[in-house]
Length: 494
Image 1 (cartoon, one colour):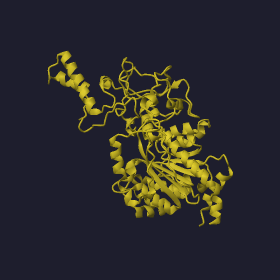
Image 2: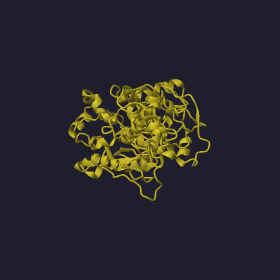
Image 3: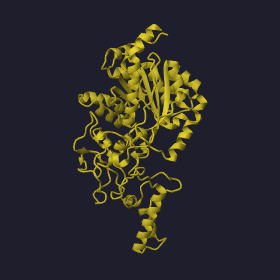
Image 4: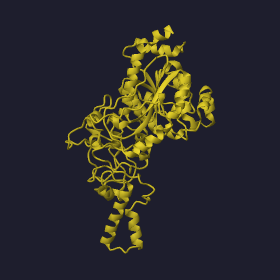
């Protein structure tokens, strides 16, 4: 079989340069969770595509730090994948010819973008990529495939939510695998929970790894490093997501390593954020409404109650992203109504329990003040103290972290509110801060988020946990290194 010359050239380059760092393009990059993991595993992040202006700037200031401001500003430009072709992207970054620019393509097309395309139609669009423009927002993963076809990377990574395995009766990932097969790639995918890999968060995501067939590379997924018994809700979600796997042949799906009881327990919330300073400004009447900027240093606790955990040490000393005496984004939202509710909630409580707590506190306050039930004053006090959401319709809207267990999944919605992650410390009576969210997502303390509080929360919730990305990247690096040693000779012999 004759392999594309560009693919063989990339293999030869990496083979001849013993210390070569494979060059990565991160599509739908966000602030850079995937990029950070790949950087830590020995890859070179040479470019990114991100449409959100602040997320794009976060990526640029972290991965091109030390470069002239003009270079950072150039990489910080928001870029729309539906409007920029692969050739234009390579030209903008001044990286030579498209097929020589990148060795690895990584990214996760937005989860809200999936359409019911069908396998035959997907192949047709992959061959005629302009067809995606009929409805570009609904088919962004097709645009990703077009970038693969144009750039001819050696390896590809796709990350996404479990629903991608069962979207309107379609296993989108299996359809992507088949389209990649037509392009000369072999691919496998798995549904992995980050808590099994050192992230203090129970986060299920699909990872698909593909290598060009010229490599002859073996596809592996990382072995679990931690043990975690996932709550029943995660198992239910997994069952729905995996329902269609057998319909398309299980050979492309790889069951994840979920660990065993002999491994360390999953990193807990207290092990992740316990060394960050308590925040009491809201209890002292010193916290006001308005944008939160990251201008004030919050020193670390001098002597955390349990000493520093391995995770906390790693977050302070991540190579290239080391922190100093503290952090600058340890800020939170102004929620004056809810401090007493947060304080009275038990760890693990959800919104129905919070609603009951709020009503109890309200009844006590109304009795103390002698307010007549049903009066105007009674109604006003109720509105001031009790959240308005129906507990039967929003059972999971609020959640108080468990001190001795990992967090629930952080979502982009934390850019709007953080009730889904209430701090376990009742004495503080608050939701988590930006830096605590970053820690739970495994961003090191030296990683900087552009913008103010709400955009930073959104960037964090949208990101791939860097530690999870690093574990995926490490097995990909090993597979590439193993395969590249003999790939050129094997291709020549064929």
